[in-house]
Image 1 (cartoon, helix red, strand yellow):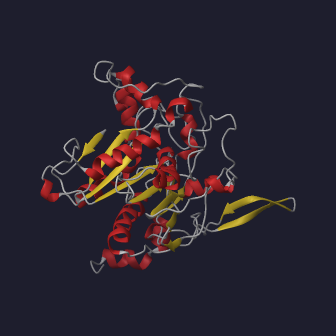
Image 2: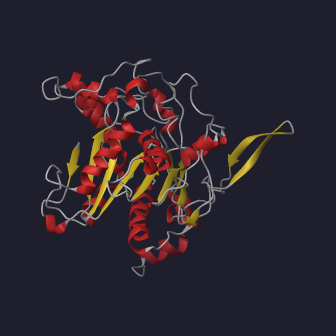
Image 3: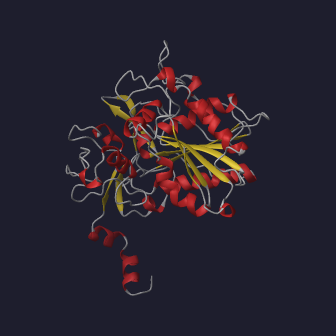
Length: 402
């Protein structure tokens, strides 16, 4: 576990956010922290990230065999970097144990002496599926000694829904069908705010198992789904010089970020170093999904402590895709700027200065080119376009009357 907390306990908000760190690249990725760190620090929250899969424990033991020698989580991959269902099914039990550690906050807790009030679980991408599954299934199964819930709420993000199955699809029967009722968010006694980027919605239009349902204020099913148009699965919300995803890769390889091999995405320069967009393109996408994620944490707190339900927002607008007179899935409806309509609206799309694309393709095959479909990019409007769109605003600014 990695615990980030206010140095002064008096500055602690009382809220603990726990993320089962993302193992998709075979090393720990803190997708929740990377986007919402400024909010957590400003708010005085505590963030806990923990290594949530055997493959990442294996990576740690290879990277620093002395430091991580005491760790024991057997990794026996069926495919390189794949799931180890025989052992990885305990992920959800560990998540419950860690939540209990901070909720009870006894002498062995890293926050002993801090006044813990709320414990949330959050995740993004693969670990967003973990958080979804934790809420869907294990919230009802693994409880406090008093019988109450361990986690006070959940923020799964960047995920089409639950993990394929509890033991990662390696039962004799295989994974459940995406349409199976057991893949739906089950009744629970704590709220869920599910936040997704446009990338997940796009994959849903391709029939790749996207979970989309109505919001609810029912006492046993408090649920919100926020789809954020313009946002992409891999993005640079805080305008970092190097994505933490790439910093982790460089650290494991013992190289500097400038020596990183190119990823191979179509809209990135195929040159060493941090990902850089081709001329006229900014890559990774700078659309600030972080604002929506931060709002989810804030609204979840209000929902739990004051009973104030978050706003309902429309879904991203879809239209049936018709080919040769037959309907094949759907497509995202875009406006005249190429930006998606509907969804969680922000000024970045209502008063746009760029076209935001939520996915990319690979132009070169590399170790990480499989992630290109998750990378987004944005195409800034030219000066003349901005002048035409916002002529009055530009004139006011130039005369000092803005």
